[in-house]
Image 1 (cartoon, one colour):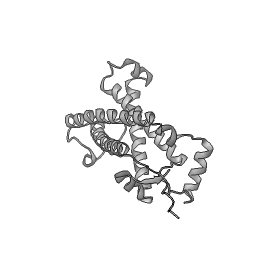
Image 2 (tube, helix red, strand yellow; image 1 turned 135 degrees about the vertical axis):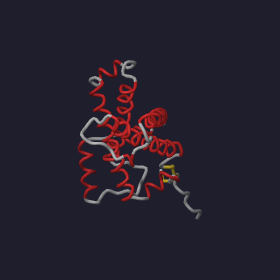
Image 3 (cartoon, one colour; image 1 turned 120 degrees about the vertical axis):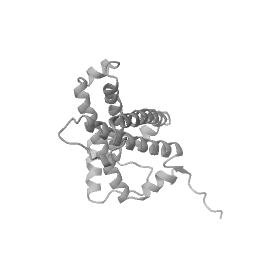
Image 4 (tube, helix red, strand yellow; image 1 turned 45 degrees about the vertical axis):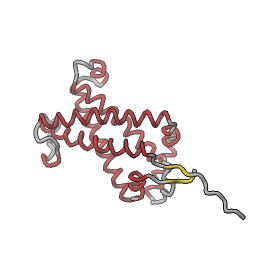
Amino acid sequence: MSPLPAPPTVNTHPRWLRLTHWLNALAVLVMVTSGWRIYNASPLYDFSFPKSITLGGWLGGALQWHFAAMWFLAINGLIYLIINIASGRLSRRFFPVSPKGVVHDLWAALRGRLGHADLSHYNQVQRVAYLFVMIDIALLVVSGLVLWKSVQFPLLRELLGGYDTARHVHFIAMSLLVAFVAVHLVMVAVVPKTLLAMIVGRKEPV
């Protein structure tokens, strides 16, 4: 008897996904650390960030880093979103989601009963988290445009409730992004094979 053919496989993290993921990560790192230095020049709240964790050295330098990374993040993020939509990956990997499904998967995760054998499948907590971070980054870009060119984007400024409110929106969106990254890193430490898959890719049976 001839051996059965191996089942077809698919790369759970294709090359374009891995590339845009790491470029987005670099852009976020530059934007957050330079943004903290910009924040320190005119604090919105009653605290400042330690200079040792900021980028730019001074306000002018931080602004240059921030604006460069802003365009990098916006363009790379747009490419990521377009390919996800055009390939159908967005609907396959991130939907459906439901409150009941999220609660179920979250409860399973808290009890250590959420499987990670198939990296091609996102549980509903992951789906909500990744959809959230897409929206959050879009909000960061929009509010950043208002802070950068308030006069040139009057409609965006009004939609965000004015310039001062846009500062709060930008800061809160940044804080939520940092919180997402922190949780993401913890989950990678818990399931380290996900990091390897995002670096070199991983084949899974279809």
